[in-house]
Image (cartoon, rainbow, N blue to C red; front, side):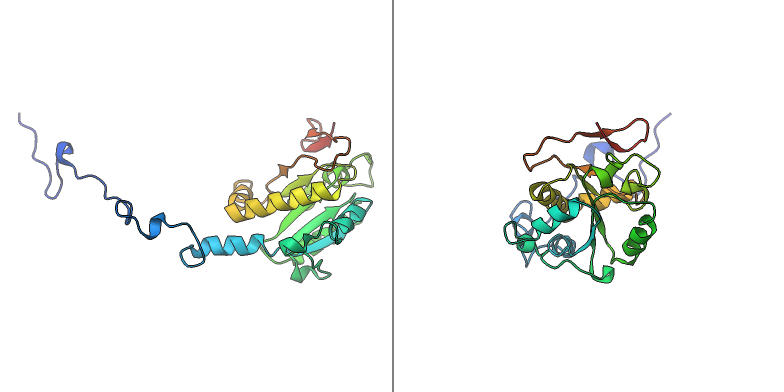
Length: 220
């Protein structure tokens, strides 16, 4: 019994035509030019703009706030990254730096300010007290600010110095520009990227590990 002939318009596998190459792949052209202002896609321009215009809504709660204020001083000069304006209004900010321990009484205030911030918005948890409660393992302190707002970057230390906070900020900028941060947040259903950076300020290293008891970053 002979095989049925191929359908009209369909070629046998042996003579299938190859996939066409992208435009400009053979002869060069716009596809081989590096991205710049003229050839970059609109999406890349938007991500670059977001990474270079983060305005922080400060949330200084304890001794970490002193290090955060030092980061904004002239010695470290975060104005180089377009972040010299610490906004007093959450409606003019898209980055929250939680610096210090969060009490149960302050948690609803923090959440309200986060909800009023512009989207897309990001959160840096600064220090072990904000990240895991630190030494304050009691009923009055929230054992991890990730219970209140989605955290994208954890900056370890007690308190972390300006170098560590700058490292966390630059890590956040790189992930925003590459689009990886948005993908991580979508993968975790809005729970935050949860990226932990290493300590860069020369202090005694403060280890932050995943606590099997609490299921989040704890102090080891």
